[in-house]
Length: 201
Image 1 (cartoon, rainbow, N blue to C red):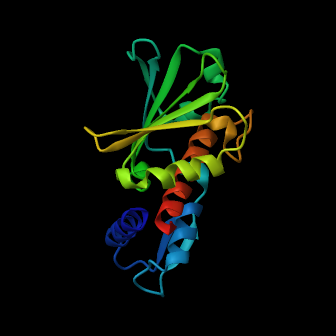
Image 2 (cartoon, helix red, strand yellow):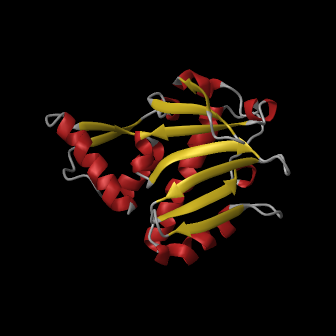
C-alpha cells in the first residue's frame, strides 16, 4: 500500500513541474524513495523539507468529547499550542485532516487526553485489509514501550478500515513539552513506519 501511494505522490510532484530535476520530500518519504529507488529518472535530486512545514495546510476541528459537537475550527497556527493544551481542556478532542495522510492510508487523526489514565490517546481509521491483523498487532506490541494497556484495534467490516487507537506517551520520541505540531508529526512517522513494516512482512 505504502509503495503504491508513494509512487502516485512522486508522479504527482513530477507532473506539477515536468522540467524540474529536483523534488522536495520530508525525511520519511525521502528515505523511503531512496531505499526503494522510486524515482523514474536518476538525474532527479531530492532535497529534504523541514518537518515543521508539513501541516501548514490542514483542516482542524476542536470538538466536545461527550457530544462530538464542533467547538471551533482552527487554522494551522493552532498546532503551535503545547500538547498539554489537551490537559487543560480535557472535554475536547482535536480532529485533523491533511493531504499527507493519504500516503499512510488515513483520512484523519484525532487526539485527546484519556480521562482515566491521563495519557494522550490517538484515534484513526487505517485503510489496510483485514489479513494484516497480526502484522499490525505485532508492530504495535514491538513499537510501543511501556507496561500498561497501550493500543487497541478493531476491524470495521462496513468501512473496511481498522479503528486504531494507541497512547502517544508510549511512542518513541514522545516528549511532555511537545507542541501539537510535533505530536502530529510523531504520529505520522509512527504510522508511516507501520506501513513499511507491513510491506516487508
